Image (cartoon, rainbow, N blue to C red; front, top):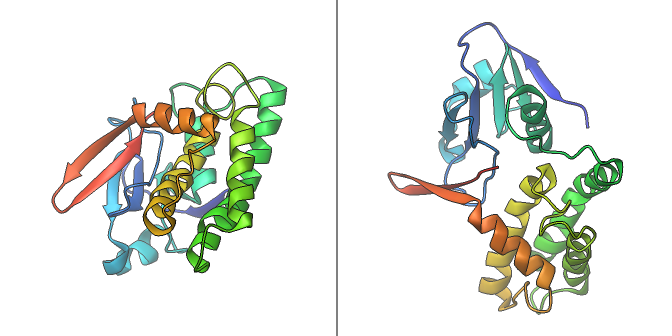
Length: 213
C-alpha cells in the first residue's frame, strides 16, 4: 500500500495527528510521543470545511501532518510513525515474523468485512463466515510462543487489529449474545494483555481510548 500523501504549505513545526471523535476503539501508538505529536479530535458529524480544503483533500481520518505533508490511511500512518519517530520499533527484525506481519496486515480489511460486517448483515446467529474469520485470528495468535500478541511481542499488527477485535467483541456480545473468547484462549489472552496497555482520556461528553506501545 503506497503512502497517501498531500504536500502542504509550511505551517507548524509540531506534528499533528487528527482522529475521529467519539470512537472508543480508535487506536494509535502515542506512548512517549505525547509531547511530540499534537492530538486533535475531529467530529465527523460536523466536519469543518477547512479540513478538506487546507489539511487533507481526501477528507478522511486519521491523518498525520508532519514535515509539510499529510499521511493518511491507518496502516500507512502507523508505518510512518514507526519509521520517523523515536521509540520502540513496531515491527521485529526476525524475517519470519516480518513476513507474517505483512500477511496479517494484508488480511485485516478482509477480516473486518468477514467478521464484523457479516455480523451486522445477518439476522440470525453468528454466520459461519464470521466464526471462520475469528478462528483464523485465534490460530494466528498461537503461531509464536514468546508472548500473547500476533508476533509474540507487541507490534504494529496488534495496533492494527485491536480496534477491529474490540468492536467485534462489543457487537457480538450485544447483538448476537455471542462470546468471541469462548473456546479461544489465545484471543482471550490477547484481549486481556491489550487492555493492560490502554488508558482513557476524558473530555467533555466523550471518552477516547488510546492504546499505548
